[in-house]
Amino acid sequence: AMLHRPTEAFKLINRHNYQYWLFDRVPDIPRYQEEHDRYREILMQCGVEVLELLDCLPPGATMANHLPNLTFLHDIAVITSKGAILSHMAFPGRIGEENIMRQALTNLSVPILMDFNGEAFEGCLLLDEKTILLAETERHSRSAVCKFIGRMLKHFEQVVHVDVPRERRFMHPDTIFGRISQKLALAYLPV
Image 1: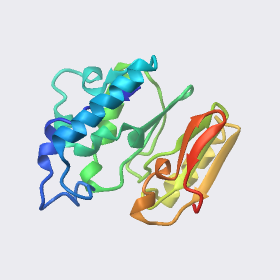
Image 2 (image 1 turned 90 degrees about the horizontal axis):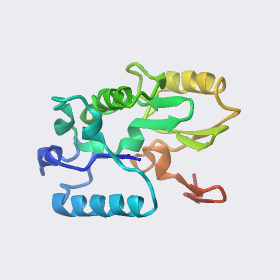
Image 3 (image 1 turned 30 degrees about the vertical axis):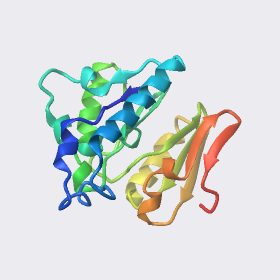
Image 4 (image 1 turned 45 degrees about the vertical axis):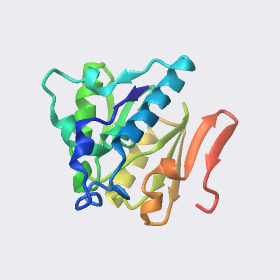
C-alpha cells in the first residue's frame, strides 16, 4: 500500500480557505498525523508492505508540499493487475495530484492503464480481477465516464456503473461502497 503522511501542506489550510481545499473545517494536524501513523501501524501488523509516496518521487519533487488532499491517494489512482487508472481531479484545490502520482508510479515501473488528460474523473473501485465499479459522481465528466466504460470493457469482464446523486457527500465511489473481503463489504444502501 502507498500512503502519504500529511505534512507541510496541511499548514496551507486556514479558516479563510478550508473550503477551497475541500475540507469541512481546519484540520487538527497532530491528530490527523496520529491517526495516519496508527493506520500505517495496523497495515504493517497485518503484513502489508507500506510505501511512502515521497520516497517514490524523484529528488526535488516539492509539489507534494502544496497539495493538502494528496493524503487521499485512493482518489487519485486505482492499481489493477493491468496497470493504474489515474484520475484527473475536478476541483482547483486538487489539480496536480495526478502528476505527483504519475511520477511515483513511473518510478515504481507501474504502467498507466488509463489517464484522463484533463477531463474530470475522480475514482473508481476494483471489485475483483474481472469487475470494476464506477460510481458516477459530481466529480466525473460524462465524456470521461463514457471513455472509461469503453476502455475498461476491453480489460475487464464487467463494468458496474452506478449513477449517484450529485452531492458532496457522495463525492467518490469509496464514500458509498468499500470491499473488505471476497464476502464482505460496507455499502451505503440508499445509493
